[in-house]
Length: 232
View 1 (cartoon, rainbow, N blue to C red):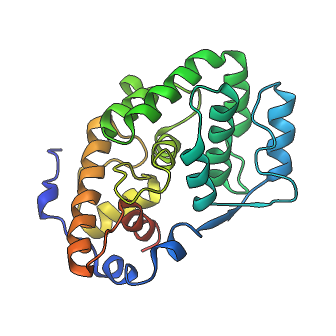
View 2: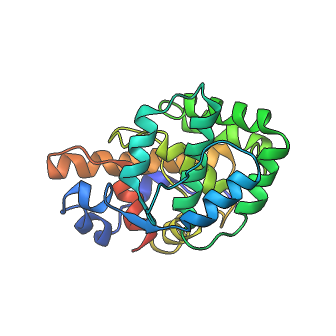
């Protein structure tokens, strides 16, 4: 199938209407319940740094929490980098633990390549979504074992620390379904995307964010578009 001409796609009306509310309520305060105890036990059992993952007594993580992590992250510290990864995975998984034990054990078996890939990705994320994505998904494979495309994009998104102009956005199966079924991106795959496709996705959301920013008279982030595409 030939690539869809994204220049003809329009942001759905429901997404435009959702942008009327304050950004902080829809983005920074977007909170997910997480399995805090499970994370602390599993990471400690694997003898990896980064605990406590969520914090004493906490059972939730918000986008704002992860923005704060990224804003102060010392990417040269293995401990801080892995704690950031665990927290992104915890937020993205919620109470559904999925492949997280496998991810933890795979990193424990050989941390160096995973840490190197994360550092390359975080370094590229603010300016080049394709390069950043390729760092985590080289040639369509997982640089961090069991870290698939959707979770890779979560890492790239949170690397921006909540900056409105950050170009990387989360892309998962639900967002992809809306883009295909509602917006008309016919050539978009379901759950696996090459770096070129992710780059086109970020550019599309960047265009929509720019158009909506002009309409509303304020900066609009690509995450505000993604948030509504996830739940149209």
